[in-house]
Image (cartoon, rainbow, N blue to C red; front, side, top):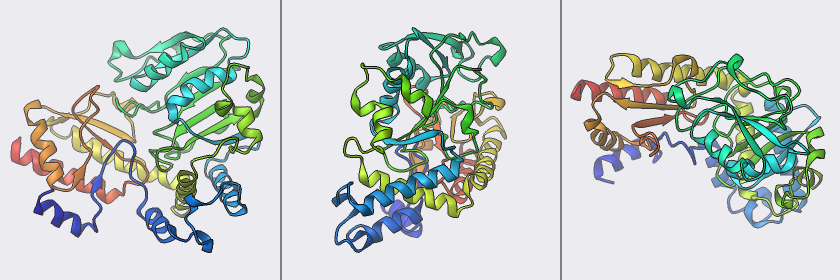
Length: 372
């Protein structure tokens, strides 16, 4: 970095305006607590990542983190909460292997990059019926549910409530009747209230709103645990992991510890309801800036816009590189859009302070005045 950026980061306490889509920022208070406990966790003379996951201290940590997550999301007792590994891509395989049962196919909703990735992996293990497809709409919106071709005999219905790359978010929870609904909530979990009982399975990679990469949370309705067949590897077996309290194999202990701190931080902020209000306000501000003059554009239908991941383009693409250069010089990180779609993207997860969104809006206004 040049001196100007170094000076700016010094003013920010060394912390940049980080809008990375994932691994994403972690609340500063959580990082500070982890820093203070790093060498001597709970006076045990070692870091949390240096002690056995079988110790009483770590088991207590694991139990508390599950209780806090249950409280935040109001998870009923007839759901298991699992702390796993392998990310969302691991769950793309785990879901069909665990709950296909005797069914021959599952319904998938194709809403963009991550939905397509889930479909591709599921096809290894089960027949896939694409019951709704947003490709013809440019993934800027989706067909309304009455147009979906759902199969009442499907093993489950899978969808991605928020597309991290394309910036499309479902404004409703699909009604799938008696067929279990499965959701990849990697980029939206803990950002808004959800009725857990509408779902058979919710899973999420941690590196957006939960904690660092390496941990994956799965919330599984307990009756579905009985569907697991012999083709499922033990490490991905929901029933086995539930019976072993997510410790069939050595879990990612440090990631689990940090996730537990994030859960407590969220409770201190007022819980999911409070975060939902803040997240809505952050997104509305940023979209208002994008829509203001036409200098910036977002191609997602306003009814389907994500509150977590905000992609945008410049009306003049020749300015893209300059925008990224000047934004980085101003202390903004990771604003370049995913290679699959290009342009820019600001990911505004729970840990992104509203003041950082305000700063980005100010920068975008200054850039437009200078180059518009």
